[in-house]
Image (cartoon, rainbow, N blue to C red; front, side):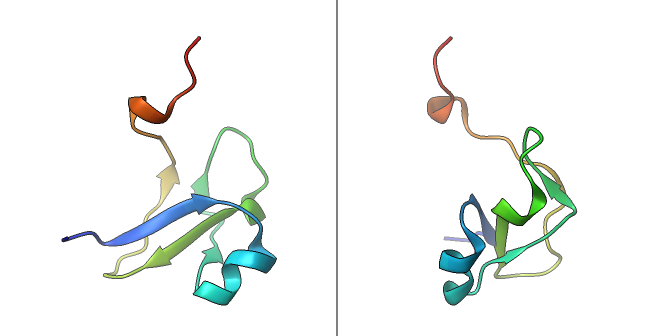
Amino acid sequence: MGVNGCVLLGDPAFYGRFGFASDPSLTYRGLPARFVQRLVFVPPAPQGEITYHPAFEAAT
């Protein structure tokens, strides 16, 4: 599909078994860095603030 990787918010103990790892260069709204997980398919690893597509944002 041409993607370079995957980013998720979750428990490192669970997602680590699938190759996901915490990366302090990724952030999400003040969430502790250990819960920000990434899996790189094609380097370089992503950096910066994670944003979701508007379809996944809560309506306010």
